[in-house]
Image (cartoon, rainbow, N blue to C red):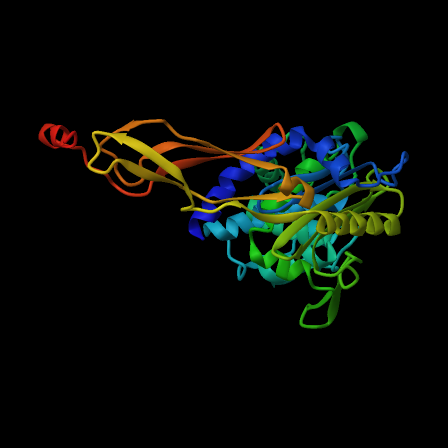
Length: 385
């Protein structure tokens, strides 16, 4: 199982290169129905473990994120917790500036103190802008300092269209100097974020108590409880952005993340997100296409104590494919016609190339299953008799 997980990381890089390039072919093969005038500006659907993009529409178009930007804030916070620079039990004091934040809020009062975990509930569940500012000031020293941390994080994970000017996503700056992102960037933020299990445990809640039960947090994600197995992730709306939603659900050991940006109405945003996720679950399966330790053939040995050595796959591999695509997979074993002894167990012998039609999906090292020593000159002479 460890080998399988190791190669899935390697395969993700390969799949991202191959599948994204051939994305329009994948969509046509699975026949996702997209209207000539879609009810959204951009959308993307990705499988979480492999990073396979299953559908994309204007995925790199630069858009205003609105509150989906809080996913990047959450990622900065949770990475700091994981590294030990922050603790969920840390006490956070609300500043005067935090208490004056508009929009979605939990009405923090200046000087009020909460543990970080409780403020994270307010951010993840109820999209509280004042909680964002309080947390940002605690970790970044100032809001601007935390914005720098968000932009550094975006750069470190390879985002190309994301830039933050505030911590909450409000469009309180001119259009040409505002927050920016894309559907593809948001999917990458989401994939990084859900590696922290606490996030999904929070984002799956439809409500939660706050301020010792005197205040109730209500989820902004209306698909919770309506779409089966959905457990996150983040909504967003401003006049500039339209209605945005980054959603995720897991079925049959496959997690999908959808991004819908710039929908014209909240109901349309939710409907299109649900339709995109349903299409993904109905048409694709995540399954092994190779298993670690599988025999791939034998390699004749020159001067070997044994005449040949068995070649096996070093790792396993998984891919996300339609049923029809799985039937079109081609496995090509590339091994030498002769290899000189000695051979040590685990030595590289060749490659298993797995292709879908003309597109290479994965290359897996083929290694020696056992060690084979080299003959002495006397043993070599005796082998002729």
